[in-house]
Image 1: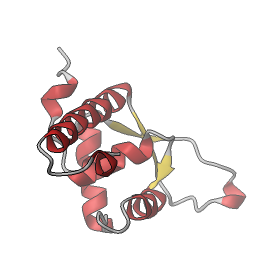
Image 2: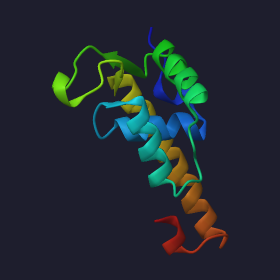
Image 3: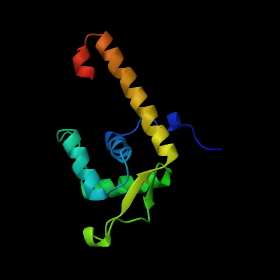
Length: 119
């Protein structure tokens, strides 16, 4: 029997950011590093060793998978590995987003942040 998405929670910030990035489509490791850093304003930085260990763990948990597909060979380095979300990975990312959203709503209700901060 497959584990429920909530069984994977909470995710580490790095794991969540990788899943968020891949929710937009498949990407290679370096592109994921750049997108996470840009999207978080540098608050989350995935260093290569940490990132590839995370990829390995996310693959073991069946949340992401390496794709065998490559873009045009003339436009891409053949050493790059491309990853995509699995259906379970998308469900886990959505569950984590709901969990974080609920925490933000509570923080707003407690006046720890303003409504604008939680957007």
